[in-house]
Amino acid sequence: MSFQDLLAAFCFGYPFVMALFWMSGGMAYHWLRGRHEPRPDAPPRLDAYPPVSILVPCHNEQAQLAETFGALTLIDYPDYEIVAINDGSTDRTGPWLDAIAERMPALRVVHLESNQGKAIALNAGALAARHEILVCIDGDALLEPHALTWLVRRFQTDARIGALTGNPRIRNRATLLGRIQVGEFSSIIGLIKRAQTVYGSTFTVSGVICAFRKRALQEAGWWSSAALTDDVDVSWRLQLAGWRVVFEPKALCWILMPETLRGLWHQRLRWAEGGSTVMFKVAPLLRHRPRMLPVWLNHFAAVIWSHAIFLGIAFWDVAALLELAGIPLVNLWRGFGLTPMGWGEVLAATYLAQAFLSARIDERFEPGISRSLFWLVWYPLAFWTLQALTSIAGFWRAIHHAGDMRGIWVSPDRGLR
Image (spheres, rainbow, N blue to C red):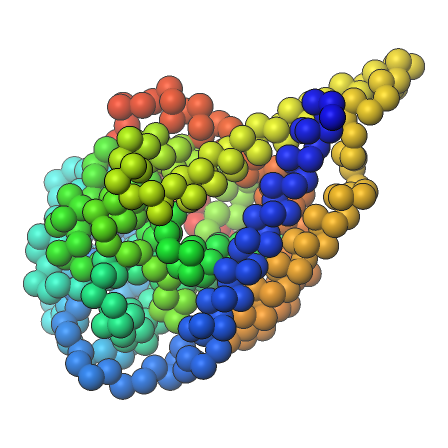
């Protein structure tokens, strides 16, 4: 078999195998946990309602705070406090939080003098929090009224669970990029988190909506200020310390996402760089937790796949240019083209089957999500290209910036509403 054949087999074979892997895990999760569960808006009554602390780190969030804290006033849970951390905001976030705290008895505000980063803000909030269960949301997130009940209920099912990742849903859909991300969070991210929960190892919590036991965070060393992606970093340290990290799809939270290519590029590049940095850091520790090895290997398999796709496209471009110049090169990049052919058609069909399966599962959590299937047909072209490029750039940036990184805040693109 030639090098070109091996390259093509890996480029088409890796996503095909992983799609089957995620679909089987997602179906297993739905069969074991989801099919007999109540609707997200109708949680069962709990035997006990332990108090909960909600941490809301904020940096220059004045445009979003009215929505975020308005949603928090609708929380349907008997005993909770809110700790807002103003991390060196340069807008009116601080005064706004102080003003609302006078009218909202459950809210306390912690002010940090300068921008220290989300990890430091969360650590400060955790120190100020009075309760054992910490629920963390971003300053632009809208928490569903029953989310706390679902998170607490899941903690009560297993004392080994140290962290939960909730179910973020996209609320800004003004552009094609926004609508594609609606499907991405359902057909890709949601399905992967279900499968990883079944298989026993989770790559990361969703930083925009997650929950922790304080004791687990203490054993893991809290959040690290040196982590570019604090959610990935703390997820791995918790699991390496022996705690479980699992998905709770009924803990819903509505979030804002970038709707420009520039904003999306910066977001995904940060995710890729932060993920690779954590993978390098935890590599020596995997011998103590071999169950984490498959997730670690899959991360680097995805990075290798991104490089392979880039190389394959480069081969195809060279062949196309030479053919235009009258110098045809036969089979320089076999099986690749502007439209799917052969195994490409099989891969496209498999991806659409994955999207359909996930949309059917998610219909209970977001009625009408199946309508996003129309926009999902653009996902491979629009996002696989972006994912490949940010994965490559993030991998090499992680190597270049090793040991010289700090996750301070930068206000992101939050799309059009």
